[in-house]
Amino acid sequence: MKLVNQSDNVDQVSEQAINEGVFLRTPVPWITEWQTLMDQAWTYLIEDGHGTNYTNIYNELSSMNHSLYEYLLSNYNSTVAQEYEKGEFQPLLV
Image (cartoon, rainbow, N blue to C red; front, side, top):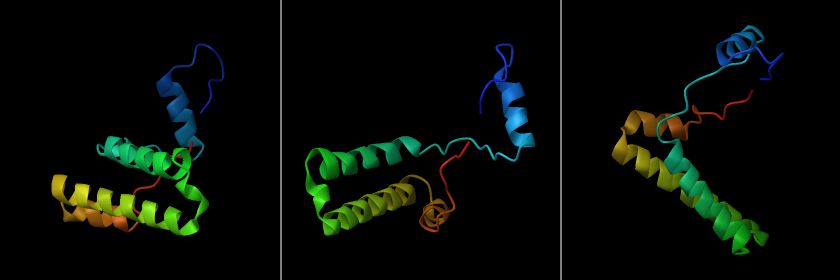
């Protein structure tokens, strides 16, 4: 979304985006945990240099996926965890 002019406010820009077919939703409350796990994966794969091996990439991302699933299961419920696992939560594209 971009401002058409300086007098636009968030409501006007949001309404314009919705009219143009953009889907907006409130971020999930567990996004901070997801970000923490992805930061850990980034550190391991990129900063620590383990990302040159495809097996390491797969294993690390699988491990982080499992960690988030377990977090959702224990802090929310099995429905949220299963929805996450089925890919029902998608990044916001604007």
